[in-house]
Image (cartoon, rainbow, N blue to C red; front, top):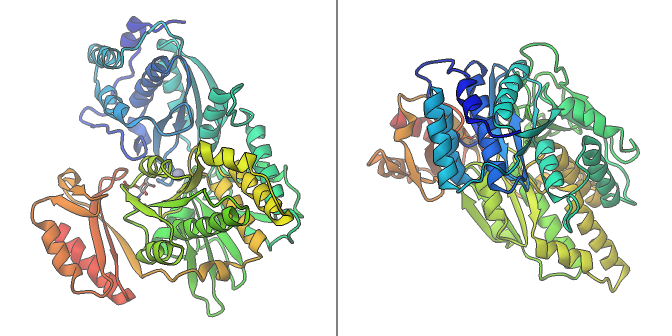
Length: 533
Ligand code: NG1
Ligand code: ZN
């Protein structure tokens, strides 16, 4: 099988819409599924080139649009260690996607080959998977057309959650090495997570049932499958919203994004005081938890709360294990609630960095710590253990039974937490392991700090690209003068904070505001939105 330029040129899938401009954004290409067939073809070519560049390492392609409505779809590339595609390649992804005919496509291919000095004779290896969207089968065919033209050896892994595909990519590329990540099968994934969970909670009484809203997406069948690998004496889960076959149900009035944005439980869940609930998003890489208090108030435990819980637990464990040389750090974005940042820096005394939106930015920053906890407020995140930290944990010698237990527990966390990307299933088990270990209710977890009231508003503008930011997106540099106006408004509110940035996944500008009270927050958000509009 060879990289066949003639076939690449001749088999090109024409653009569905003449004037559509494609951008490889925060989470790859994402838009209405109708315009994505042509993109899939090009993504396949790019994946093949990337694999060739990396000496035939396996590259992943995931077809999903996460929390977007069912009619949308998207695609992103996964690099050999399970991370997002290296950023410098994104411009070429965009260029390829916008090439309208065979000639211009080949011109971009030649540019990539020259830029990265790619040897086209190196064999390419690509694996791919997709979520439950009705447009997936067609888009998969378009992808396969591109894989064939570029002569890639490929494996269709079928229906998977996004994090599972990341896991598989890493397993395949590390197989047989000293840092082999796991068995490159779906079953291997379940076994790894469930056995780590069982170790992490050993000897502790099981918590009450956790109600899991799977957003009528791929998380539902996969969680059901995982449960076959773990005893209900250890983990009790009730799956809600698992209708993946009725059209129009995916992410509809349910899922992590619905809960976070509306700050309420999905109407399909009847939730009463004492119930423990969580919601995944459509491709199961995000999770948020929630409960209601005795007086019926809805309480959200979002990504910031998960980061705080993980940071405090791991910091304590490291200390109990007698390996204080391992330092824990947390990475957030500007959307993190001000109270969470305050709690992490002032109460826990852990270093916190703030980076631009998008997990790829958080992931890279988290790699700088021994243990890097990173979460977006919307519930997308994970915890990374550096190779040195991993080695220290593996070789630590216990002097007491308590140290022995702490070391074992720390090690189980390194197995339980998906090291490639945020993973709703893995994060759910992490939170359950911590709460089981501490025998904490959601209320007790929630006690760490109280969120400042906050509001996220979407403003549709004629051209979102004019909004340019700096300082991890916390300040606008363009349009000129707008930031000064925002600052003047913010200064009028106690604990006020607000910022504006263009979305990378939707054609809109996002306004975030927080302040001391709900009324002030809403007022600030509204006034800033008016400035933008
Ligand atoms: P954009 O649309 O760029 O704000 C959204 C989320 C990100 C991230 C991506 C990818 C917010 C405010 N933004 O990005 O955190 O998750 O989608 O899914 O939640
Ligand atoms: Zn997602």
